[in-house]
Structures are given as structure tokens and as C-alpha cells.
Amino acid sequence: MNNPHIPKKYYGPKRYYGPKKHYGLGVGFIIACALVYAMPLLPSGHVGDAYVFIHILLTALMVLIWHKGSYSLSALLWIGLAARVILFLASPITSTDAERYLWDGAVTVAGYDAYSISPEFLNDTPLRALWPTPEEHAQYATIYPPGAISLFAVSALAGPHFGFWVWKLLATGAGIAALFLMARLVKKIKTERHFALCALSPLLILETNVGVHVDSFSVLAVVAALLFLKKKFFMRAGLMIGWGTTLKFAPLIMLGPLLFFLRGRETVRVWFGALFFIALIYGGAFLSGLTPIGVVQVFFEKWRNGSPFFSLFEFFLAPPELNYLLFFIACLLFAVAAFMAYKDKIYEAIALAMAVPFLLSPVVFPWYLMVLIPFLAIRPSATIGLWVSAAPLSYVVLNRWIGEGVWEVSIWPIVTIGVAIIIGVCVDLYRSYRRMGSDMPQMNTGLPLN
Image (cartoon, rainbow, N blue to C red):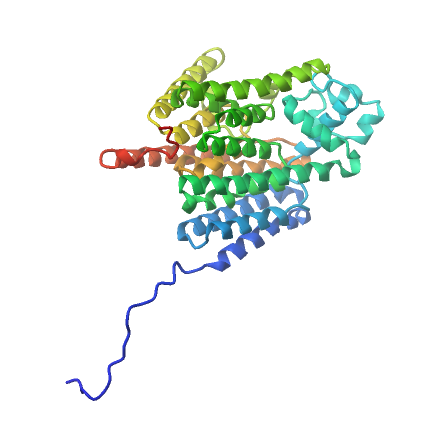
């Protein structure tokens, strides 16, 4: 029996302090990024394994941070910024692309046509001694569009000693700019809860700040175009798409779904802005004596990497049957993307359309997929998430490539990537099926035009 003279302890209403902070995850993420500095100390036969380990560790930390929702948008910005800045001095041990970029830029500055002259053509010149290129590139002219060549030329103007650091500064700046623009975009479409999937993406961070790939500028162009579309600045969005196309061709695909989503005037503005910028850059290249065609066909004939479906089709079919099949699949997927855009699912439509070339290409290096990652922060997709997480498994090829110069693609990473994509597609289809019905009015992706 309770004694009435003993006062009861008053608990009162519990005060809500918000989600429990998991500061250790953010600190752990930054420390895991710094592990990259230990990679040059490893035997060459384990560099690929080390990269895969770091990527898996960062992916696990990113998913935990995203799942717990412990960090605000500003906190994620600071963590993402710190991760990018801390890797500025990291050696590009996983890729030699930066050497090729600087060579193409130096050749252009010297007055040569990088599209018609291969590095070995200038073997006996001082230019070749000052700007070495990877041996596997020696026989081929550049494959990069003129917008990218102009960025390479700006870096090469700093000379062979400082050119790389100028290029890395430009690439890092592009990655940071894309990070902040992405933060503004997710605030506008109210998907801040998914921002961690972009701000802390290991693929974005490592391929920009370690691999130093030109694709960081493509990501910036895509994010800027999406932000301008959301703000209904259609001409500016078209200009960003055009700029991205002069760096790499993937952003051009955005115009397809937008044709089925925008209204007449908006469509004209976007398309005019994109085509105007492309014509301006390519026209300037032709007038300056360049022939911006490149050797893309030779590249695709020579290289094979990271493409499970092309490898499967190539095993059973040979040209022209293989080409017919790829063309049919591409048309089918582009038609699906067009239908999704028509149904106002524009972000999913653009992501699908941009993914099609990578699904069917014989060469898919992990950094090619960087342009897909911003869509994870807009509308998370199991297909894209599992794909970009599994793609770096192909880096195990570096174990023999760096030490022995042998490019021997293992089967298990390709199979794993293919299985990851198939699982992701099944999950996304199941989620779409579950959302049908009562949730149909809520499926608009946040880019209304009315």
C-alpha cells in the first residue's frame, strides 16, 4: 500500500532532444578517407585490393549515416567538404588519366591538333620529354571533347611541375561546387534526408580527389542543370547541359526525357541553350584548326572493363547481331524513360536515360557512373546505389596492372556487378509496385511547371 506521506517522484513529460547524434560516424568517415595516403606504401600487387577495401568501408559508413539520419544538411556539407579537402594531396595511384589530360592540354597549347596526333608521333620532340603519357595511350589521339581539352590546356599552361596541381585544384573545386549546388537542390525538392548519399558518396569523393577525373565537371554540369530546371531557368539549364556535353557526352542525354516533360516554350529554351553552347565550342575548335572527332571507336574496340551485360551478349553473339540487340535494348529503355518523363517522373526518367549507355557499353570504368550519383539524393534507387557500390570492385585489375603492366580483367567482379544491378532492378520494381494505387497522387518528383 502506498504511503500518502511519501511524495511521489515527478517524471513529467519527456523533453525531445531530436535524433541521437552519431558524431563518431562522421569522424570515422573522414579518417577512412585519409587511409588513401597509405596506398602508395603497399606492394603494387595489392593496390587494387586496398582501394576496394577503402571503398567498401566508406560505403558502409555512408549508408549508416544516411540510415540513422543523425546529421543536418549543414553538418553533411562540412563532412563532405572535409573529406574532399583532406584528399587534395593524395597521389592519383589508381589512374593515369591526369597524365593524358595534361598531355592533350600541352599539345593544344603548343599548336598541334590533339585529335589527329598521337603521343608517339611526337616521340622525338622536347614536348614528349616534358609531358610523359601512359604507354597504353601512346598510339591514340585524344578522345575528349573540346570543352575538356580547354580545361586541360589551362592546366598545362602551369608547366610540367605545377600542371597536375592546377588540374587537381580545378577538379576539386568542381567537386566542391557540385556539393553545394546539390545541397541547394535537395532543399528545394525537400529530400534533405537523402543528401548523405551524394555528399558522402565514396565514388564521387575518390574519383574526383584521387583519380582526378574530368567527370567531376560533368557532375557539376548535371547538378547545375537540374537546379536551374527546378528554378525554371530553362535557358540556363540548357547552357549547363551544353557545357557538360562539351566535356563528356553523357549530359546530352538529358535532352531526351525533357522533350517529353517540358512544354513548348520551355523545351525550345532548353534545347536552344544546349545546342547553342555545343555549336559555340565546337565551332571555335574547328576555327582554331582542331578536328574534334577523336578515336572513341578505337577505344571501345580495344578496351573491356566493368560491363557485365555487354560481356554476356558478346559471349553469345558477334556483330552485326550483337549491334542489333544492343540497339533494340537501348531503344526500349529510352522509350521507357520517355514514358516516365511523360508521367512527370522526370528525375527517374533522366537517370534511366543516362544509365542506358553505361549498361550497354563494353567499357564502364567506375568514374563513368559519377553523373548518376546526384539522382540518389533526389530519389534513391536501389539499382544505382548497388551499381555504384559494386562498380569499384573492378579495380582489382590494378593488382597486376601497376606491378606487371598486365591488364587481366577478373570474372568475379564483373559477375558481382551484374548481380548487383539485377537485384537493384528487382528491388526498384517491387517498390514501384507497392507505391502504385493509393500513393499515385504523391509520385510527382518535385518539378511542377503549372
